[in-house]
Amino acid sequence: MENRFLKTRTWIEIDGAALLHNHEQVKACLPAGAKVMAVVKADAYGHGATAVAGLLADRVDCFGVASAWEAVELRQNGIENDILILGGTDRSLYPLLTEYDIMPSIFDYESAKALSEAAGSRSAGCFVAVDTGMTRIGVPDDEAGVAQVKAFAALPMLEIRGIFSHFARADEADKASAIEQKEHFLRFAERLDAEGIAYGCRSISNSAGIMELDAAFDMVREGIVLYGVYPSSEVDTTRLTLRPALSLRTRVELVKTVPAGVGVSYGHLHVTERETRIATLCAGYADGVPRLLSDCGDVLIHGKRAPILGRVCMDQMMVDVTDIPEVAVGDVATIIGSDGDAAIPVDEVAALAGTIPYEILCSLSRPRLPRVYE
Image (cartoon, rainbow, N blue to C red):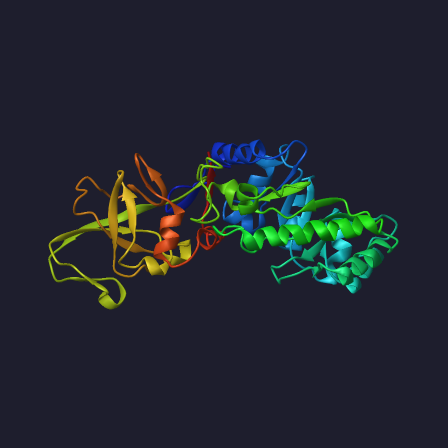
C-alpha cells in the first residue's frame, strides 16, 4: 500500500546510485582480493540499514553492526552475508547469535567459552578484537593477547573467522599514530602465525584507513565514506570522489510578514530588524535538526539560502524568506542536501552545531522520519 505520509511533512531522501558509486570508489582503490565489510550500524548512519544492506548484499562480503538487535533485524529481512557485531554482546544472547549465524566480537576467555558452549553441535563464528591503541575493546597486542587467542582457538566449537583492530587517529594529517597501530597489528598477526593459530582474515582499515594508509590486508570496513562523507577535513579528498547519499527535507507550512521589532520563537533569541517575511517549516530537533542551528544556520528553498530565525523548536523552525518572494505554503525546504546548484552538506551543519557529520547522520536514525529511496 502506498505510504501516504511520504514527503508530506519531513522526510529523508536516499540516493541509491550515490551509495553504489561510493562503494565502487572504495573497491577501485583496494588491492585485488581484498574483501569489504559495509558498516551499517546506527541504522546505516541514518540511511536505513535493511535497505542499504539489501542494495549492497551482492557487492560486499560482510556487514558490520553494533548490536545483536541490528544483526537479527538484517537476518529477518533476508540478508545472508556474514554479519559481525563490532562491539560487545551480552552472553545471554549467544544462543540467538548461533541460531542466526551472527559473529560477535570476542576479547575475553569467559565470553569465548560461553560462545563455544552456546554453539551446540555446530561451530560458532567470531572475530577477535585486538587493542592496538584505541583503548576501547580487544585483547592486548602483546604475548598475553596471543595467549588469550590461543586459548580461544582451543575451544571445541569456536571458529575464529577474523581478527580486527581500529585506527584511533587515521583521520588526522599526522599518520604516525596510525602507522604505529598498523605495525602493532601486523606483529600480532605474525605472532599468531608463529604459534600456528588459525585466525581467518585481518581487518584494521576504517574509512580513513582506506583512504590514507596501505593497510587493506584481507578486509576493509567502509563506514562514513560509503555514505558520501569524508572522515574529516584532514584527509586527502582526492583519493576518493564521493557523492552524499542523504538529503533531509521538509515543507513550508505557513508564510507571514511581520514588522521590525518582533521576537521570533522561544526566548525571542531573534528580533526582526526590518519588515520580515517568515516561513514556518514543519521540522525541528525531534526530526534531527540540531538545536544549535538556532539563529545561525540556513535551509534551501527554491535553490536559495534562507537563514534560520530564532530557536529551533521540537517540531518546527522559522526561516527568513524576505529575499525569496516566491516561497509559498507547501514548498520544499532542504535542511541537508542540494537544491539546484546550491547545497548544504552535512559537514556544514555539523560545524555549526559544534560536532561531526557522524553524529548528525546518526541522529536521523529514527522512525519519525520516513525514507524515500531513489
